Length: 130
Image 1 (cartoon, rainbow, N blue to C red):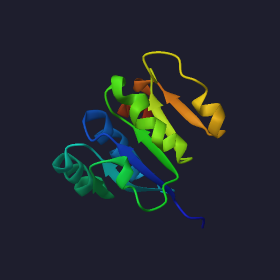
Image 2: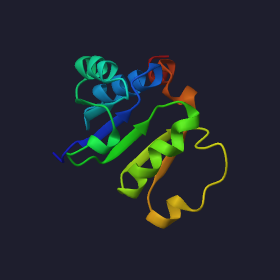
Image 3: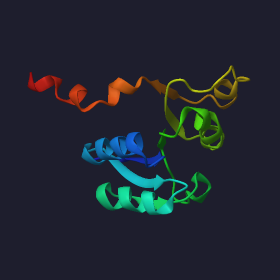
C-alpha cells in the first residue's frame, strides 16, 4: 500500500471542522495538521479528527502533500500564497481572492482546486445511499 496523502486544514471554524472530519474518514488520507490563529480551536478539532494543532501554516514542519484553506474569503489568498510557494497542493473554496492575481499558480506549476462550498456538504457524500 502506498503512503497516505498528508493533509493540513487551515482554519478550524465550521468549514475547517467539516474538511477535517471528511479527511479523517478517507482511508488514503492522513490529517497531519489543523491550523488556526486560535490555538485552542485548532486543538479541539485536532483532538476530534487527528493531526497536530498549530497556530500558523509557517509552523508546518513535517512534509504536507495538500492543504485545505478554510478561512474567511478575504484571507484565502493571504493564507494560500505561502502554501503554494512551498509547492503544497491547495484546495480553496471560491472565491479564491477579491481580485485577479499575477500568475501565482503558473509560476509554481501547481494544482490548486477551487471548490464550491456545497461540494463538501454531508449530503454529497450520501448520494450512493439513495
